[in-house]
Image (cartoon, rainbow, N blue to C red; front, side):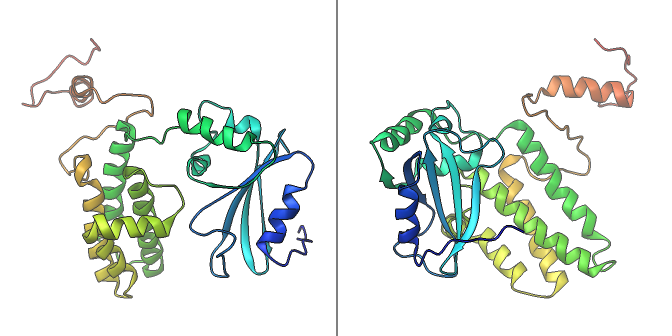
Length: 270
């Protein structure tokens, strides 16, 4: 175990110290709170920007300052000069506050990414079909064996609620990882989904939890074509693929040996 040896009395002390480290060109903060109004009960998010990559093996560090968990990204100027972010979590820098800017370079970097980095607004066909499948699959797994292993059912329901929250944030183009923000958005714009989640997690009645879970699954899939239906063949679309109905129907005819009227078809590929 690596020991956290910092002796900072406050987040402001930490920020001042980081600003004096060799190679640091900027410091930014993001998330729901600033270093000035942070208190125990939440974590503090910031990024220290170096002139060169600090390591090829890590890009962040977690530690505590005065009882407050700190999530500190360790990035370089190169990370902000890419045409696309290295991962979706870097998108938080599209809306952050500059705490330290050694030469003005940090302001320039942030302005640069705002013109290049774009949050994905379209849900791919691959994502749509997977959500339609996963929601139905969840219900199928529990429908007839809810009490077969009660602990498993409760854990599975809780995991599915988490899955629905993640998909909700993606479908609504919300900042990743900000659950409070997601719930606030949901309560304002999708009150019935918010109520189902609140009701499911607010009771120990497994039957009630499952009923609300089914309604959640139906809600999250409703604008994507609905959950996978019992009489529907649903294809898993490749991440870079398209949903070609004619191609899919041709394969159904091939693999099942008949068309929609049950007539035999030539299994040879056209």
